[in-house]
Amino acid sequence: MSRMHFRWWGVVGMMAVVAGPVFAEAKPPAATKPAAGAAADSQGEALVPKTVAVDTNKDGRPDRWEYYEGGTTVARIEADTNFDGTVDEWIRFERGKVVKVEDDTDHDGKPDRWVDY
Image (tube, rainbow, N blue to C red):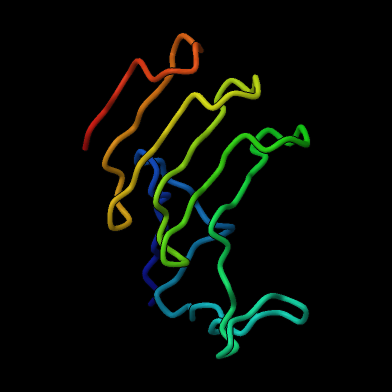
C-alpha cells in the first residue's frame, strides 16, 4: 500500500501540490547529468544558476528573483508583489529556512514591515 506525501513550498509555509500525488515508492529524478547542450562543470555535473528570474503573472517581465548560494540552497528571494516594476518583498534564508521577511506595504522602495523567524 502506498502512502501519499506532499511537498511543501518553503516560502512562508504555503503548500504547493505537485502535479498529482507523490508516492513513497516514487524514485527521484535521474542524477545531475545535464541535458544535451546544458552547462556542466569539469566533472560533468549540471550547473545550477546563482540567480533565477521568474514571471509569476505571465506578463513577459520577471517579478520574482531567487538567489542561490552553493548551487542549490536559496539565500534570498526578492519579489515585485504588485507588479509595478519595483521590488517590494524581501525574503532571507539561512541553511534553507526562512529567517526574515520584509515588505514595503506603502510602495516607497523601503521595507516598513518585518517578520523575523
